[in-house]
Length: 225
Image (cartoon, rainbow, N blue to C red; front, side, top):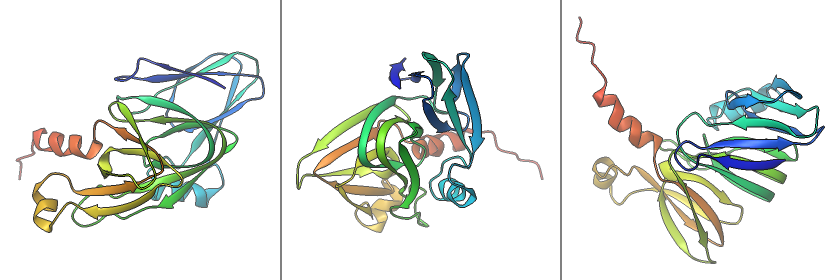
């Protein structure tokens, strides 16, 4: 498939141009528009257990949509739920994707759930991720703009877990709290992830958890008894 990223980085959408017989799998609800000549089917992609793992552990939708091109040049437009950026990644190997960042992939890629840390009493920013493996095209989304960093062997970056999008296989990672418990409670950072190369990491410039932490106190309160 040919992938064109439109309106990046604030309100990005992906335009996928497909050849006859080509198959694209996408998150439920990601379809923005499509041309005639595309057949859509909704399944759990791998059965009920895999669907439950993706939904409960990976933070993705239980169902996935499969789009099959019936004609050459069929066009499929996809967009994420939140405003932000999209990146197209031609994958040949394994990639770990933060919960909520998977948007779509070609038929040659297998999407599965991998547990990579844990949600704790002190933070909602547990590091749950998907394992995407195989050869094909992968489309990822972010909240905010996407920034990539290439790590050399032994080079380490520390990233807030709420800003992670993805990283390549071979990168070593460790989830930890920021400093002491006082820092964890009051710094606003929660948990961080130490990532050590070689490999590439993708970050998002905004955090959903940080946004919700700002938004919820602004909402009207129900004062009725």
